[in-house]
Image 1 (tube, rainbow, N blue to C red):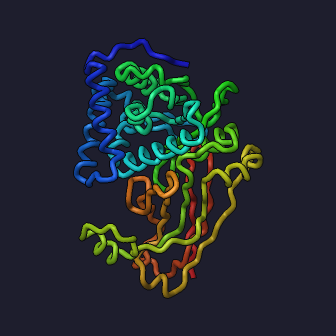
Image 2: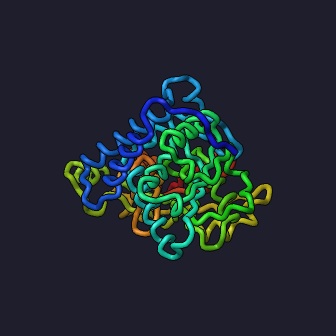
Image 3: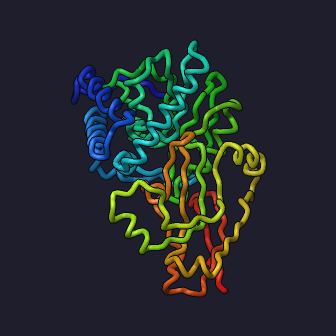
Length: 354
């Protein structure tokens, strides 16, 4: 367990806290436009880099850690995730809404968030410190990378956030045992790439969620993977205008893999057994569907909290993963998929041909 005594001399604490408050108010505003949002995220990144003193270009900060449950990306790459504006914005808004909901049920005790995979900045929860008092919000922080832990300690010092911290653990969250004295209201895990590739989101969720109380809020609430058809002409038309309408250039299958509270609790006892495998799922499309599309892909849909979500192509987390180019392989009619856990997690696929 770590609580820092390190000094951040780069930006005075009061100035940093004032700036964080300004940025956070913009991020949660219902009236924020795209340009203001982008500027606020850029300001947040600069602020966190300044307060942490993290040298992004130091070679050690680019090094990933290979774990039994997947790859923990290095501090440089983890810190850069903040640049994915929709991801950062919607996660912060979703967590803010979840905290408000829990507080509304019991004003007499603080909301406790267990945040697994904080990276060097704890980006997704740090802005909330500008909105809630320590009597309203408490944090348990888990991070596997030593450099990120040291950066996190400087962040806590720089924002004078000690009163918000129940504990910081330097650990692999996929096998961490939560101490019995800690009870989390919100379990926040964001250790993923698109299509749930490579990183240990699934392994961490299956380890931590069963240790939580029954009414814990899992964020993101659901991640689902689908086999999807994409029409590139319609996509180009959609992207050529400032379009907020529903995306009509892709067609999802039913989910071939789902990560949510119900699925985890239902599969947990089997998941722990040696040799466990998620079931194979086969998807086939009709000739008409195939004729009207160019690619078969894996799409990712993320429900962060209630109506706050990330849909296809909205974020780096939801960029489709290509399976087949139908213009060059016209015999493909679908795909057989299976989600694999272990050192290189991801959705394996085998094309189905006519």
